[in-house]
Structure formats: structure tokens, C-alpha cells
Image (cartoon, rainbow, N blue to C red; front, top):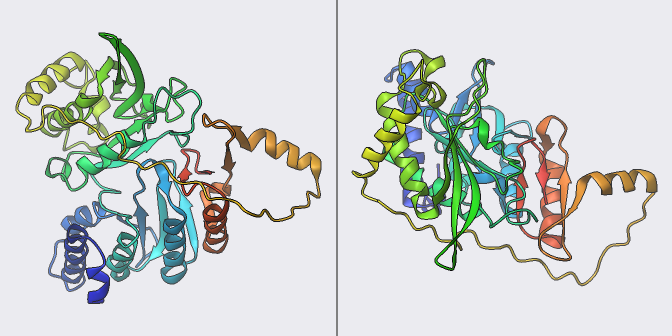
Length: 375
């Protein structure tokens, strides 16, 4: 890896990438235990495939957000290191397949140049923070949850408390009560709420915890109808500490939040919440004020000239317009849903799409939980 590439990324990312490179070298030279190396690489977004000698690399995109330049970089790396396919996931990530293990540090470094990470995309960590793909433009939303999702992502990224838990943690923010992010099937689910207090409008969240799918599906119970916004991260941190301490570690299929809060199989919800309240008193951050401007609203390009477009099948176009185009909360603007077959898009059309976005739309592409895109 070149020195110039390392110098172009943050010191934290430099340390991560160099450490991954060193661990790979130790493993390939027989100096590292396979099971320990596997646990390590997973938390760096490198996941084994059943095909011998290749890996899947998962790119972590908080609430599925990308800029046009980021999508171009992701597509270019796919062409350079693998088969040119980008696979979007229901967790709003993008995955590369058939990656050589030795190439993964360099891929990570080149992603970091555009502000993208693979850290904690897999493994027993706080996984990618998901959210409604329409957050920020949803006509039904009380407020934009994007800054809150971003703040949670930043707070727990590389955080020592969630580097080696018994199991993964999945978190979702919905933009409204419609729950388009399916919060009730997550370990942590947050739905925005407004409350009048002393003549002032306060922001907060309805909180649900311990949901999940799998062989035994659990619908997350509500633990707060209104949790003030500054208590969002302290509640999560206290809960993670309790989960880490009391959660199952030997039987993998039971090592989830949903089993820990179960009355018969775990400690029960009431006991769990009591432990969280005790834990919160010991936290360094009793309150975390989230910057509401953490996610900058994207600028909309000034359009001076539009290409001439001829619609050859008016009926087909009208059907597309009805099903894939919707009004935003911003008056006069529309959102567009892009369907990706099986969540796959080739690098070449992905780059074309990114350039169209940069020319005609707000520079804010979101991956949806159904593996499509929102423009």
C-alpha cells in the first residue's frame, strides 16, 4: 500500500487499515489462530465466502446514505478488484463478492478517502444503523431523524464497549409512525415524537427494544413512549453494557437481546431496564446533546438546460410515475424510487446514475431496506 494513500485518510482509519494488513500477513504465514483471526476480520467488514480463497467485503453506509462521488468510488473499486457488481442489502449496506483477502486493506483505504468505512460492518458489534430511506423528505415525519442516526453511528464506531459482545446489535430509526424502517424487529428501534413542555416543543423518541426475526420472531416491546433526545445515546450505551454482561455467550442462537429480555429465557424486561438505569448512573456521558445540523442538507444543482426526452411508451411511463415517484415534504420537489433486481447493480450503470444525480438531483442517494435506491 502506498504512503500517499495512507496519508490521504484519517489517523484512525490509517491505524485500522495497517492493523488489518498486519493481521492478514500473520494469518497467511501461519502465525495467527484461525478462529481469532476470523472474529477480528469480521469486525473489519471482511466475511468469508463458501468459495475457497475469496471473501465478501461489506461497506457500512449509515442509514444507506451516499453521495454521487461515493457511489462512483464504490463502483470503480468493484471494477478494479472484483466482478463489477454492487449488491445492496436490507441493512442498507453494499457488498463486494469474490475479493482476495490481501486486497481488503487497500479497498478499505480507498473507501476511506471518500469518507466510507467497513469497520464493524460484520461481527459481534453494533452493526450498521438503518433508517427510513425517505428520512429528511418524508411528508409524515415530525422531524428529520438523519442527524440522530448519524450521531449514533459516530458514537459507537470504534467504541470499546461494543467490540467483542456476545452477538450483533441491530438498530433502526423510522421517520414516522408508519415505521418504514421496521423498528419492531430490531434490538433498538426509535420513532420520532414531539411533545409540548412549558410552551416549548421538545424532540424525543418512542423506544422499542428486543425485536427480531429468525426461527423465533419477536415483536419489540415499547419501553418509552417519549425518551428525550439527549437521553438516546446514554440509554443505548447503558443497554449495551447490560447486554454485554448478562447476554448469552455460549449458545449462539440465544445470544440476542430478544432472549435476554424474555421473562422465561432471560432476565426479563423489567429487570433489564432496572439494570440499565443503574448502569446509566456510572456513564461518563449522562446526557448527549445531538447536533441537529450534523447531516448537512444537500444542495440542489441549478439546472440551466434539460435534455430533450422522448417517451416511447406513455402507458408504461405513467405506471412508473404512479408507483415510483412521490411528493416530498419540500414543496415542489419529488422523490424517485429506483428498483434494483435482487439488489444488484453493475458498476457501469451505477457510475452513470451517480453522474445523473450530480447533474440534476440533490447529491443524496439512499439505499432502501428493500434493496432499492431513493433519489
